[in-house]
Amino acid sequence: MLLAVLVAAGLTATAAPAQAATCSGPACTYQNPESTGCSADAVTVAHVQLPAVQQRLELRWSPRCQSNWARMYLDTDPTWLRAIQPDRGDGLPRVTQLIGRNSTYSWSAMIYSPTRCVYADVQTRIWGWYRTACV
Image (tube, rainbow, N blue to C red; front, side, top):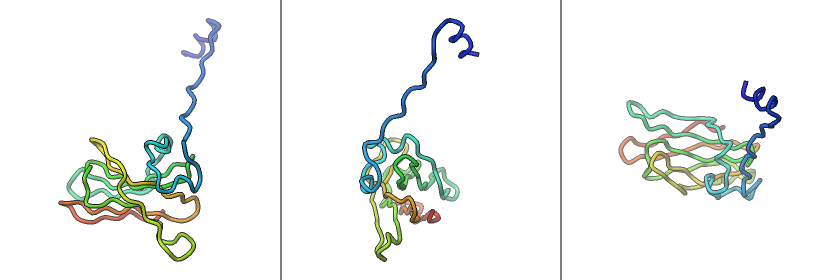
């Protein structure tokens, strides 16, 4: 309806351009998903709900940056928070650590991972250790 009104008035509606990510491909590994803009198109691809509490461990994926990272909801000071790629093709794992937090989330750095699986791993001070599926 709004578009019809704009057209009738001789105006055009344009979508706001998406924020460009400041990294791409392998250069996103070990970078912050928030400051690079990779979090703008991110989706949760795996999660673990901690029992009897609101905290949730998430594995996030950015299609634009083709990277994963771990994010923890309502625990901004975990003992550790990591994204782990168990095999990066050479038999060795790639691991990123906690890199940022705000009043709602804490998150790890990213791992470029268009073809190999990654999982999120957290140790909370009160609730223990949790891991998502490797996606």
